[in-house]
Image 1 (tube, rainbow, N blue to C red):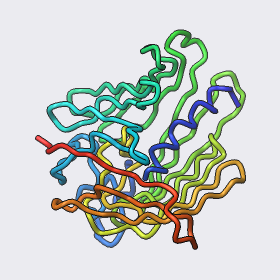
Image 2 (cartoon, one colour; image 1 turned 120 degrees about the vertical axis):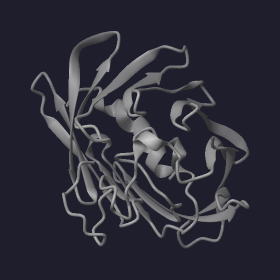
Image 3 (spheres, rainbow, N blue to C red; image 1 turned 90 degrees about the vertical axis):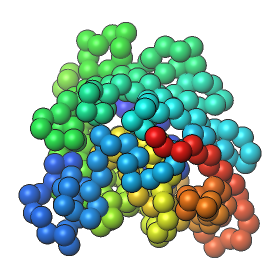
Image 4 (spheres, rainbow, N blue to C red; image 1 turned 135 degrees about the vertical axis):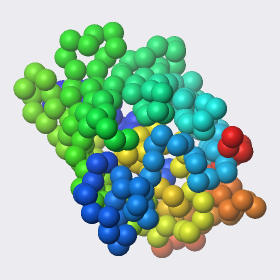
Length: 264
């Protein structure tokens, strides 16, 4: 598979800090694309059901990431504080993500994602390419079924394809991200029932949650990390701090802090 795929490892930060589906209107069936489903998530409305937007994420007292939003509470930029690298996000008039630039520390984009929609709010296809040389893009295809999103990357020079899958619970919380493109599996479980801090996700059709994950198991290239998160919440019911433990240990291995602003 083309060497562009290892660059997709940057997607791991989303799930670790942590859909055209079936036509059924049955409330017992999770359908993140069905507005009548209890786990519907709408990427065009930003943080509509929450009152706070995450602006900074700290690890052990150090700012790791910062987030910027437009007047509609939609994410437009992410920056990784160590390097000033990150993402710049472009949207259409409906608020849908149509372009995401991977920004280098020098401010230039070294990778670009473009997305195409039909009638719905979830993309049906996309492309991944070097904006300085778009002669050999990778095509992205999405298929949606009940509580699962499949994302297939197709090399245009016949080097093959690879498919990632993302699975949600009946509330719309991501439970399993099987990212074959990065040889990684992330398993999220034991979500709380408080307000989630996930307004910072650029790709809500495949990475989203309405609550906060309390157990994360990551398997990456055969290395397994299994961790427990214990949150302290603010008055609005959002996590302001998380103490992270390796499963089976009572030693805090990491402290995460979350800073917010009020949504418009």
